[in-house]
Image 1 (cartoon, rainbow, N blue to C red):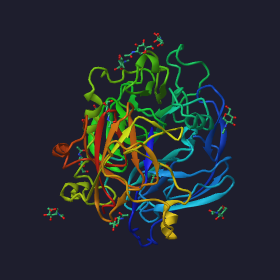
Image 2: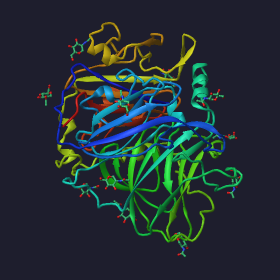
Image 3: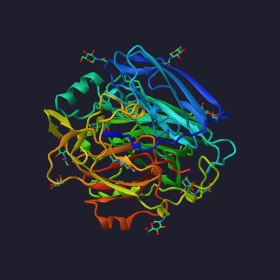
Image 4: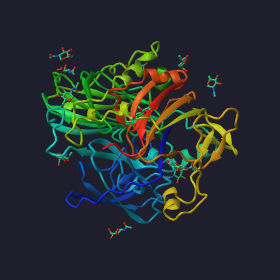
Length: 505
Ligand SMILES: *[C@@H]1O[C@H](CO)[C@@H](O)[C@H](O)[C@H]1NC(C)=O
Ligand SMILES: *[C@@H]1O[C@H](CO)[C@@H](O)[C@H](O)[C@H]1NC(C)=O
Ligand SMILES: *[C@@H]1O[C@H](CO)[C@@H](O)[C@H](O)[C@H]1NC(C)=O
Ligand SMILES: *[C@@H]1O[C@H](CO)[C@@H](O)[C@H](O)[C@H]1NC(C)=O
Ligand SMILES: *[C@@H]1O[C@H](CO)[C@@H](O)[C@H](O)[C@H]1NC(C)=O
Ligand SMILES: *[C@@H]1O[C@H](CO)[C@@H](O)[C@H](O)[C@H]1NC(C)=O
Ligand SMILES: *[C@@H]1O[C@H](CO)[C@@H](O)[C@H](O)[C@H]1NC(C)=O
Ligand SMILES: *[C@@H]1O[C@H](CO)[C@@H](O)[C@H](O)[C@H]1NC(C)=O
Ligand SMILES: *[C@@H]1O[C@H](CO)[C@@H](O)[C@H](O)[C@H]1NC(C)=O
Ligand SMILES: *[C@@H]1O[C@H](CO)[C@@H](O)[C@H](O)[C@H]1NC(C)=O
Ligand SMILES: *[C@@H]1O[C@H](CO)[C@@H](O)[C@H](O)[C@H]1NC(C)=O
């Protein structure tokens, strides 16, 4: 399952308004639309009648103003995944810093994408609404004066992949409230659509699938986001190399992949050159990872890449997923190969690597251990260090703004407590302003977890199997750990992140 963490910083930074930076205005009506992505009619969440929603295409330092009308029958809170809300952290759309918009009301999000570039997405962050859609892309382009570490692509394509249930989000929510697991999803959608009928016995007739139209010889920037609920997906395009160039606002060392694992909440951009002979269309595949293949075969997303000179439909078997049933190092080695390009400039012309995170002293370190869900007061709850967060009635930032005491406590344990029974809590990590924090996620659950640090980017410095120990620090990547906002931690593994509790600039 995916968890969004918000961090409260002791002192809020104040950014002067930049009058010269352009504004982009959006008017969104968020409401139910009827769709049948897997052949079963259901209410999905659309924006201005569209599912997925529109792409917010902006550039570094722009001010974004989104007037959202909530046409759903329940509260709505939209979060901007990976966008760093430096000026207005209460605009980030996470419960605690932001209130949901009541049904029938409108509210205007306003934020600046100060010193940012890259590929992100937005989605409704509460009540499992994301399982019903409501998501869309955010593209933050470089300013013209800053060079990008690759040639100008001939086109820009956004692809959303994600697991999908034929049960609607209110029914799924009921299952969780009754202590049940959501179970296996019914399929994987690509851009809100079901699979191409690559196999008559696995895919029923009449499913609408996504076709991506391209021209031979051209190179496209393809931005892939896993917008699902809990399934890690392997992404691949038949016959084509994926040149990884960016993840969540950082330019990576460019490297070719035939497939890449994209975990829930993660975003990647690839350059893909249409260098094949178009003897037929090509499959675009997103298939579940680290599961029993024969059981999960029907849970596979399949779209079609169609050249303008294509000579026929795609047919035959899908391109193979990684054959790593007996090689548990494959996925982790692939994740480790995602590195920061130290010499590339990003939002500013100075190279990304001029910010040397390894020379900064860590001021706080937290070891956060997850375990399999437990029962607390009769409900199924996830915990970190034995605590299951329960959002207080008064949002945290409002409590701060009005000096209300006792809404939350700042005593989050730095290490998993020994022998203490799990409990509900409103305990928050007390980040030091301008401090540099080390967060170690230890997964003692039997399932993959993925963590998103809302409004921040952290450096991924270490990941390995087994238990983290003090000695693990000796293996950290002190040079080119990538800065991003979402990481996966597979079962019985750990992942160490180092993070500034204010933004590096
Ligand atoms: C979800 O489905 C249930 C029936 O299973 C129905 O009662 C409920 O109104 C639906 N909710 C939405 C938002 O469509
Ligand atoms: C996004 O904006 C950039 C810069 O203004 C423009 O070059 C590009 O064509 C736009 N992309 C889309 C998909 O509209
Ligand atoms: C609601 O929408 C109206 C019309 O677009 C706008 O004038 C108003 O400012 C919005 N209210 C909020 C709180 O965003
Ligand atoms: C890193 O970025 C530089 C500067 O833009 C570029 O020339 C180089 O090809 C990139 N290197 C890799 C390995 O991606
Ligand atoms: C379709 O899938 C079924 C079930 O996995 C498999 O037995 C069959 O061989 C597949 N058919 C083709 C034509 O690949
Ligand atoms: C990636 O693959 C393409 C096509 O085969 C090749 O031209 C390019 O040199 C490769 N790039 C890297 C960084 O390996
Ligand atoms: C096109 O490419 C495919 C895959 O590389 C190859 O099997 C096929 O023979 C080629 N067809 C033609 C007409 O060149
Ligand atoms: C995968 O599932 C199938 C069908 O339920 C079962 O027969 C098989 O033993 C499972 N394989 C593994 C490795 O668990
Ligand atoms: C980091 O800590 C070391 C040892 O305590 C100290 O010598 C050094 O000056 C510190 N570096 C910075 C950048 O604060
Ligand atoms: C939170 O941290 C600040 C220093 O960063 C410290 O002054 C304050 O006492 C801490 N609060 C608690 C409750 O520990
Ligand atoms: C972690 O998991 C292992 C293996 O399932 C188990 O033996 C151990 O007791 C667990 N430790 C904690 C602290 O939950």
